[in-house]
Image 1 (spheres, helix red, strand yellow):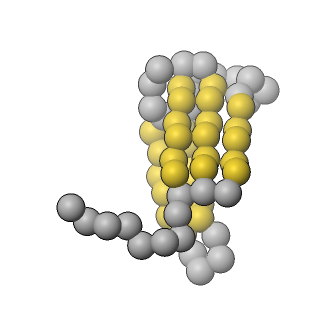
Image 2: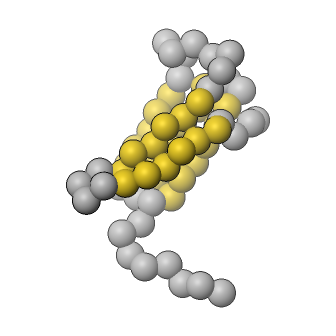
Length: 59
């Protein structure tokens, strides 16, 4: 699996995700959004991003 090139930005109301997936058909992809979980799959690309509104701890 490969991770697609991506650009992530946000404004006060939206989280904006731009994916670059060359050599794949737009009719052949899976997109899953459930609560804090985002998954994208289009052969040979896979991307999973956990999204949370709560602050993250720094280690």
